[in-house]
Image (cartoon, rainbow, N blue to C red; front, side, top):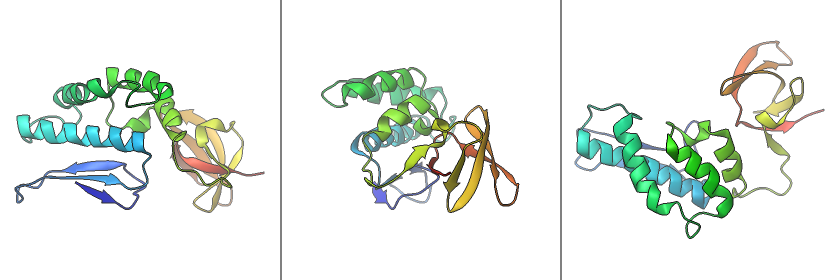
Length: 174
């Protein structure tokens, strides 16, 4: 297992390499303790699925889901997770998705435990009203309509449209 510098596209991963005896799990270093544990168990379930089923199973299919649920079940107590996380975690674990980042309720609750800069004005994009403007990666956008897990946003300067995750942390602007 390796703890890596933060990556914007994933919280962690399991890598199968047929040329290696040992497989690799990587996790982002900036995860809060609860997100770190959840991500570790998610990736451990991939390793267990690989050990039991080889490479011939769906990456986030029924075999992986069952193993993930089995590994998480004994941890879903208030001795491990704060009570405010147990409700969204238990709901998430009924049918876990490929990424906990797709679960808006769970991610919002998890984010309460992130190390925050007290001067940060970041909010989730989902918390802004349509039409509001915001900054993301130094560029100004206007929030548009929600399309399932992403929001259609227009870059103010160019008029180009982009789909942005509801869970993107943005800075509201005037």
